[in-house]
Image (tube, rainbow, N blue to C red; front, side):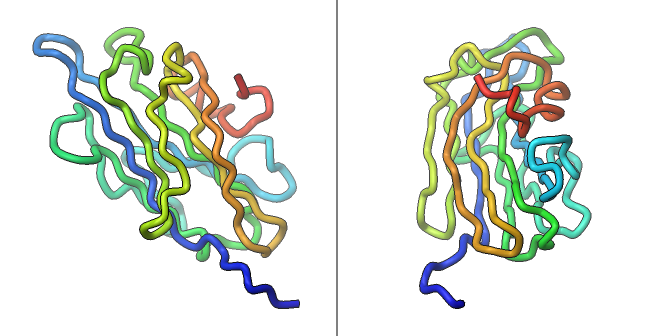
Length: 178
């Protein structure tokens, strides 16, 4: 049966933040996307995409990566082509993690943070992390579908306190919810 509802096909995730003060360790935020298969929608991710990586099939790519937040506009940008993902993938969770290599930093420690998820010119979500100032990482939304059906977006900012590796391992699990 056909439906007049349009599917979410291609989205862009954008993150921005201010650089650290002179002499302080750099503020480094990273977008992370985790894909999940139908048989384990809340288990371990099938694969992760973050800095220095891309999806095996080229459907999720990090177009811009910043380690400092310097520059104009959005510092990190990731493209997710949901319409090209194989039917075996039924869930994509998107998060943002703060690198912790130079000491413990939270969203409350970094000025002017913002995340947007857009489909074309339509903003699906816009958030400044003010609800999770205590967190070192946060899930910002997820895309889900039943089998080969249409993708649906679920906005949700859920904070996490821990290292980026630990966050990436559990960001799509039910236990990662704050």
